[in-house]
Image (tube, rainbow, N blue to C red; front, side, top):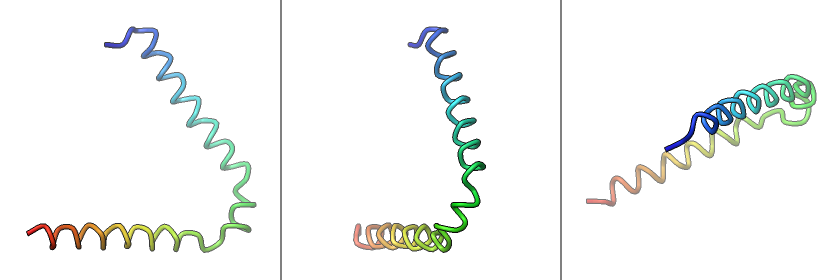
Length: 62
C-alpha cells in the first residue's frame, strides 16, 4: 500500500507540523489572549448547534 519511504515522510511531516504549530501558538499566546478573549463561547454555541441538529435528525428519522 505505502512504501517505507512514504510512511517515514508522513511521520516526519506530521511530527514537524505539530512541532511548528505548538511553537507558533506559544509564541503568540499573549496576542491570542488579548484579541480572542471570549472566543470559546463561539465553539460552545457551535457544538450545541450541531448537537441540536443531531437530536432533530434522530427524532425525525422515525
